[in-house]
Each structure stands twice: as C-alpha cells, then as structure tokens.
Length: 401
Image 1: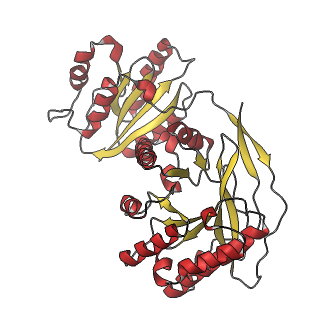
Image 2: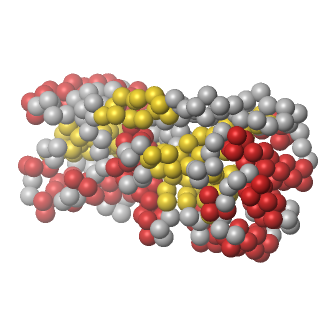
C-alpha cells in the first residue's frame, strides 16, 4: 500500500532559484534511496509537490520538508493511499511551469505519469495539480507571512473570587471570547468544572440520565450567581446547555429567565450555547423551547460546530446568532488544506446568514493568524486566556513585532 501526500508552499524570499535546483538534486537522490517518488511543480513563487511511496518513508521525508526554512506557509492538501504510483520515474522531478506554454502544461505533466492505466484529470490526486497549474490568482491563497512575529501583553484581571455554596460538586470558570485586533472582550463563557477544578465528566458519569438534565439546568443559576459576584453584569454571558435539557425540563425557559433577573442580568445579555454533537430527540419539543428562548430575547449559539453530524441541519432549524467552531476543526488549520477549505465554507455560510463565527480552542499563534486572514474576528482559547475556577483569567493580548 502506497501513501500519497500533496502539499503547497511559498518559496522563501532569501531562497534563490539556483539554490532550488541544488536542493532538488539532493532531494531526488534522498527520495530515490527511500523508494519515494513524485513530481514538484514550481511557478516561480509557489511549490506544489506530490510524494508517493511507503508510508513510513513518505512521512519521514515530509517531516523534513516541513522543517525546511527555504519555504514557508506549507499547507498539506492531500494525504491518501493508492495501489500504484502516479509518477514513478524520479525521486523528485522538478517541473517548472514557466518553461511551457500554458495551453501545453497539463499535457506535459501527464506525459510524465507512469501509471499503467491512462491517467486523466478526473483522478482526484491529479485534480490538485490541474488546479495549481490553472490558477491565475495565487494571491488569493491565505498565507501567513514569512517573517510574521507576535508577542503578548498580559492583562491581569481583578483579584476576585466568585462565591457559591461549597457543598456543590461543581463550580465554574469564565473564559473570555475576545477580538484580539480591537482588544475588546466580547463575552464570557461559563465553563463547568468539578469542585477540584478538573473536568466535570466524572461527576456527570455518576448521574442517571434524567439527573444530568436537571443538574445541567440548575447549574446555570450557580453560573449566573458567580458571574454576578465577579462583576460581569456589563458583559454578554454564554451559558452552555444540553439540547435535551430543554426537552426534559418543561419549565427550563422560565427557570432561566428567573435566574437571569435575580442576578441582575437581562435576557438580551445571555447566549444559550447548544452543542452540535449532542443527541437531540423529540425535535418538535426542542424547536418549541428554542422559540421560547428567542421570544424572551435570549440569543442562541451552536457549540462544537463541525464535530457532529447535524451541524448544517441544526443551523437551519434554530437560526443561531453565533457559531462556535469545534476546536478539533481548528487545530493546525494553518497547515491543513482540508480544514482550511471546510472552515472557509463555514465562514462564508455564516457571513451570508449574518451569524458571527467564534474560533474556539485556539492554542497556536499560527491558527489565530490564519483564521484572522480568513475573516474571523472572535476568538477563544488558551492562547489568549485559560479557564480558572471561580476567578477571571488574565488575558494575553497580541502585539506584532
């Protein structure tokens, strides 16, 4: 079984074309020794390379390529398996697009193919080569700058400790959602933690299913009490709710409205975040409860968007004001072509529907930088601020060197 990897990158500003020819010669020999073959397209600014061979050898060579500082903004476009090689003549054959008339380039690339079956551009692997060859506007690529560097300024929060009953087996931390560019705190999300500050999963695992929905609801009163004691009454507050909590607790909306008023908030300040990856039964009841929330002035968000199977359908059903993209969908997005394509589609859909996109779980500067280029303005994650049980975390604001 052969592994295929295709990536795109941008030549470094200090990398000369004679230097390119030299490292191609060395790489050709290295790849050949490892039984790795392929083709490297070059247009003067960008590379597109197809690597094929045994999985371990291809992965080893690809890691070396990723660490090479002679190019930047490397994006993995395809990682797949096949039964034969598309290009088996050389370890790394350089194909300079500038040496050919544009109308003849595609045929010239196909002429180097070694498959025993006649290759056409219906083949998905070759479609990447075709798209690269035919692209007239490579400036549209979302690429991080070669020398882009950031530092962070720590902004400490007031030393307050939220008050609530010590008898409770859970507590909350409040993680901000921010616009790093304008240095604005957009909202705070109440995140449940066990009494010891760890994940609440073990606590929930000890409950019966109906108990889970009851605790999920009544815990929001605790979250609101803690938010009040931390002085968050001037901010938007995001409260996560299991969708079936609305179904199993007929008085859920009235309970939430009472808790909101009792703690000095108004419904328009509250966002109820519903996880996309949670199972929803009794759709009619769920939809009716969602309408109650909206009529009361409470806004809605879909959490973990992209992690489940009902995301787009749920989007059409509840018409949220916000979408919080799942952190796994954003992990390493700056170098993952499939994730980039999906996230760009999410951003475009939400923009068309006037839905704000929040990029959650951000841990790397490069993730934030790429998503910022893609048009996202609202961010949340450890890169900027973590979760501190019963306290407000310090915020790291980015400053460009």
